[in-house]
Image (cartoon, rainbow, N blue to C red):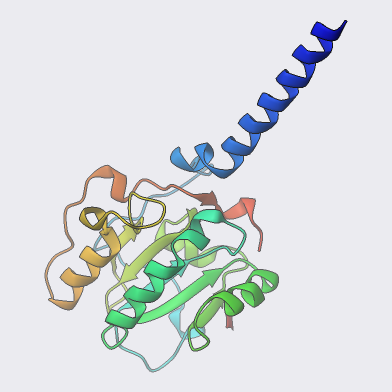
Length: 203
């Protein structure tokens, strides 16, 4: 009887540890499942969206940072995102994109106070840019064509300098070069699905 109880306790213990490990680590090492009817958007494609709802009178390139305060991966990359913004904000307009009012309030608490938070309620902007996970960046030229859409880094804490994909894309954009040719890991979505975290400018 004692052996059976011990086996049960140990099984429960290791199952719990395994579940926590999956929740906090393993699931984010796998690509985010693509939504049904997903349409990829490729570099140099024009983005079909009414950008006057975001900010008028600006002709700079744009970086849309798709962000969820509830997503561990989004929180892990905050320091890196803020560093990019400080480095490139003279040349590029930065926006944080969330999916609802509650997430917008949390995002404003976590991000710099002067960043525009865009509430993409129906994911129109995300779909226009081919984004379905967080954190992801969509970089657009001043003519609103897609320059780069993808991951910030292959490492969840953005510590691998050789794979700072967004930074490399911004360097090319500012230097008026063509988008870099990245490995698939740069553009295959990882992190949290947008519709898993139904979380300012209202679109």
